[in-house]
Length: 251
Image 1: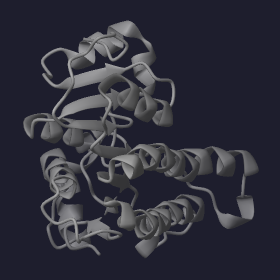
Image 2: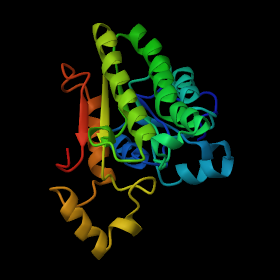
Image 3: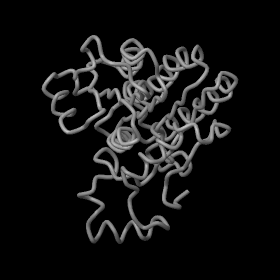
Image 4: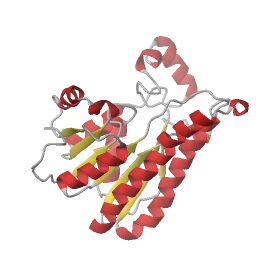
């Protein structure tokens, strides 16, 4: 059933996952479905009705949302279900090589919109509802790249650092209202976006991974999905404002 269908039955627990087909989106959606959530899923591709239907096929509990923007998906969830328990702001933009002496203002603005403005706006939309309810959980997917900024990637690393800091600041502000906020900062997460398996899950790729991080392998969608579920479970709500480095021992 499309997210635009009126008269949906109220859900027991409702989550929103942005950019559901990329980065930590697939793992988050599947883990939340299995945990019993109704998951409203945002993705740019879902503006197409056929793409929405294809995504929902075989994914009970996942609802593809036709909202054009990630903040718009949060608003649709509240309007449709009357509640919002968890928001996963899964923010994606290519880590483009851009030396500091070749700064491109246009690319900087595009990256800032995707990696900082969008999660800040998603947090704002979610917080407005969660503050009124007196409960809720927000998880922002950032990156561990700022821990070791690489030459040529100052724009990407700086904006990811900004998003993690914003999540920490939001957590302090929202804690009195019973709302937790965390940033998960991956590196070496298996995904088509940043660590495609066809490049890294080869003999050469595995050998390289063994030299780069103690775990010697890519993190899986299932592992990051389970972490998202835990942070939204309410089992440890005294924990808030943390940046969790999901890096297999690299950080």
